[in-house]
Image (cartoon, rainbow, N blue to C red; front, side, top):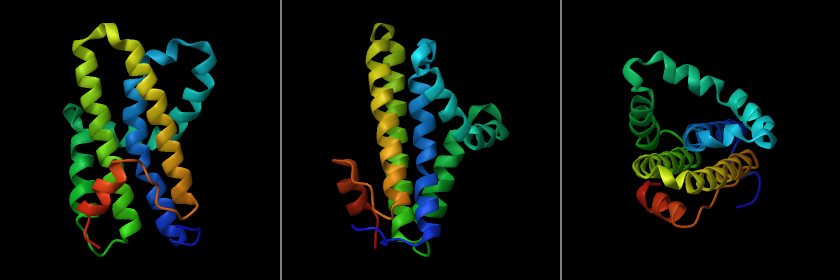
Length: 156
């Protein structure tokens, strides 16, 4: 899709929802914070994620991400009054977050795979930034397999 596909409000909110998946990617790659060359990148990302960290911190018992998931899914993805562009981005971000959380759970049981988690985290960070840039340009971000599923899942 060319630029101009979505208005500026849709572009902004389409990009913002990927911050939730970016948060999950950073959590997965926590071991990368020990690498001095990557500290400036993670400091920049942490500034971008301050609103998400604050939001998650408001909700007690560590249930922030679960409640945000339900709010995004029920209030955004399932709401036909919201543009398809934003609903598509929200659902894709949710799927990325779920995938990253499942990978994190698996890797926590296998601590020898910290390097694998770090590589996946870096790839996921790149994917999140790609999606945010595509949204800001007014294009629907295409991620193989994820986008096809989301496109078929969300009613137009």
